[in-house]
Length: 170
Image (tube, rainbow, N blue to C red; front, top):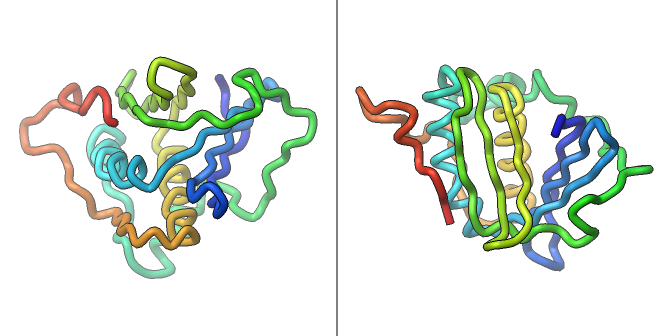
């Protein structure tokens, strides 16, 4: 699946984040992310960014850091959802598990899935991972979930290989 657009927005009625992925094949896949799920996955996303993907993000504070994170994503362009088909159905996946893989140097694969049900595979490079994390932080701020999503997260211990990444989070 080749990603064309990503969007993460807060759904106040469901008290969940809605991840929307539009592909270059004019398909849209939606997934609900709960507060608990976001809290659990964040340190692992930071570990991948700071380790396998080759370096730390700018420090978590200040406008310069925020601008550095936005350079590779267009945040002002609205999500274009006209003429998109939904191959996994119209109801969003309720993500309960995440498998994080490092398929190759500079790449990160997130497999988001419902228990024993539908799944969404996101193949991301460093820039897309940074954009995904920035969108996640912004949506959590809007949701007012009282989560601290710092970019200064734990990294792999010295001598610990990338294949020691957690395989499944839930």
